[in-house]
Amino acid sequence: MTNRKIFLTTLLLGAAHVAPAATLSLEVGNGIRAGEPVLVAVYDSEANWMQKAAQSVRAQAPADLAKPGVHTVTINDLPPGRYAVMAYVDRNGNGKLDRGMFGRPTEPYGFSNGGGAFGAPDFSDAAFEVAGDGASVRVPLN
Image (tube, rainbow, N blue to C red):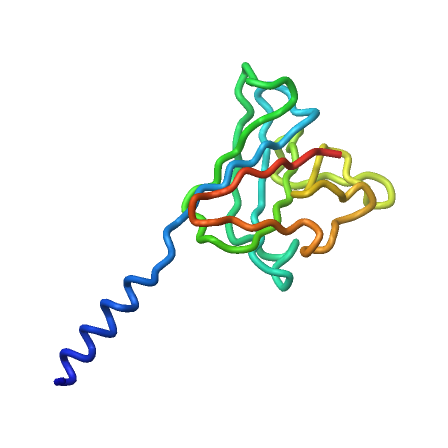
């Protein structure tokens, strides 16, 4: 086989193994008011947890929430894999999670798989799998 044929065969075989992008549907809830901004960060590893998001989204809760206090946020084009999510309601619109005395958040926040009432959970405790056909995850707010 010529070098060109080997190169083309390798290129075609590599393209066949590209994982399709999935959709992650997040039900962020309890305490969201109509029209409030919800910020979501999706992390793809322990090393990046709470430091560098793989994807982030700012979504506005609709004026007529389908479920009172709950808003569905969709993340598109997410490669299948293991992820963890942190979300919060940016009540004052300043783009950050505000904190009060002793560093405790003053705006509703939460993590995938719950937890976080006394600080961020470990990545492994908040992690879930996103398969090729996507995933749906609930993110309760504290």
